[in-house]
Image 1 (cartoon, one colour):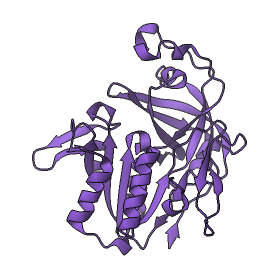
Image 2 (cartoon, helix red, strand yellow):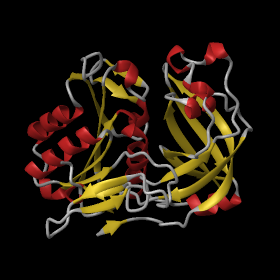
Image 3 (cartoon, helix red, strand yellow):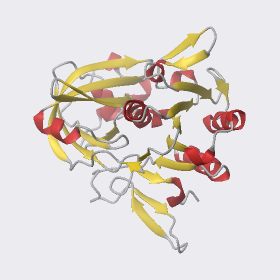
Image 4 (tube, helix red, strand yellow):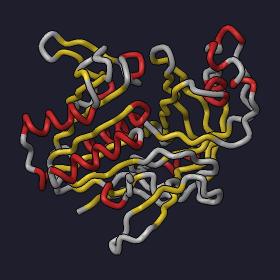
Length: 311
């Protein structure tokens, strides 16, 4: 039986910055208090859905606070809203708090670094369709690549709270240690682990392409190694993944080889977030092997991996 939680209708709400904490050289965790309208819409939503933030009125930070490689890009005007997945959704005193993990990559995210406690933002959401948790499963394997981490953090906590019988194991991959959007800690017995998952009592494994942290190689290789070592009952297991499309294709292939159910959260350029601009089209499989297309923002971003044509 699948549990999809609440499938709330999108709304326009006001969010107040609670905190905006840097994580390493290029990541930030933004925490937002939602107003009553937003709290009603986001209360109890399932992980994997996203929001659009209106950022056009944010100021450009001082020149010394702008990374050298973004000096020119930072001057561009912000016209369209920007989509962000959620790494946490919690309730406190009748209001909902959402957390967003972002990387400083361009004009919009450079401006987001200036957000201070008490600042106001307009948000649109919750948008899209999230993960479906099958409560008959006993093993949930979460596979994150780079900025695919946020929705899987939310999912890990959601499963731990609502499905305590399920074992959750998280795998996080990045090109290098500096590209991991997590707080990496060291245990004398367990080695490296991720604080964000550890505080949920979730086992975590790290893989970096250059070997600067954890397993040297792709996160999909570490996943394959873990499956071989632990031989989980594949009928009782499910893989949830988010990250770059080549990684998702590898995860889907591995899941198919082991006959493990798999859901993937696709990454795509989204201009409007509600299906109007159709800029986030992805190629899909059909039972008749005909060409079909889905909108990542409206039909997804979460899909059954068997439904996606990875080429």
